[in-house]
Image (cartoon, rainbow, N blue to C red; front, side, top):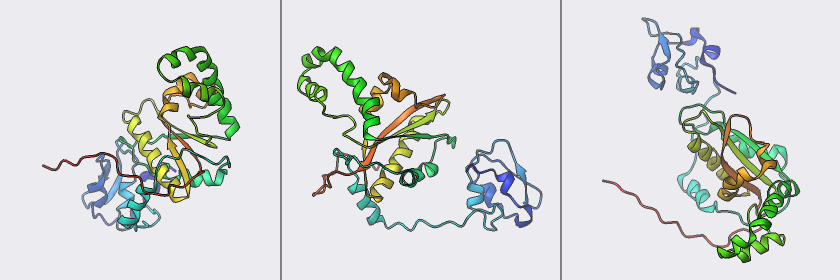
Length: 259
């Protein structure tokens, strides 16, 4: 639920300490000569910082739970999350999806704009109708080009019923962000990344599907799920894992530059 400080603030609890004003990124808190909050400017971005840091609980927010995360346990979660290539066909129930997607409401956004919409497409047969079927029709038309490019074998397997795109996942999660959001590309990816970690913690597998994101304009059935005025920023395949890794996969190449 969006945070509106002017609705939750209780002036009688304000001590004039000034903490809310100091942590406000938009300089939206107005105070009188004694430091007591008198209102909020239109520049307020409703981030909730004022309420989160208020020592007198003048905004009546629930108490913080604290971080409480062991760094090594968190690293174990990072190491465990790898792309799932084999999914079980079991459907994901709505209540499970709500738990899975809960981190989206906590994901940071570059301008605090929020507005992320996640569309869940459920069911192996439904996904096959919306994704694999139209792509196979297109591939039949362009099969000679695929063969010339050296992908004839993969194209033939796809036409014969293999699904190298959605991997038989029982659920697709499409992350849409308003076109007006200047940091929308990053915001959608951050939200999806948080969901992948939640999935791992819940024993579910995920697959970042950049191929399907690129093919989205060619899929009219899937495009109908796009909310007006938004852009697709991330696609995840989600489901129960068909296989569990037996060994730890090596780290990828990366660098740290510290002057």
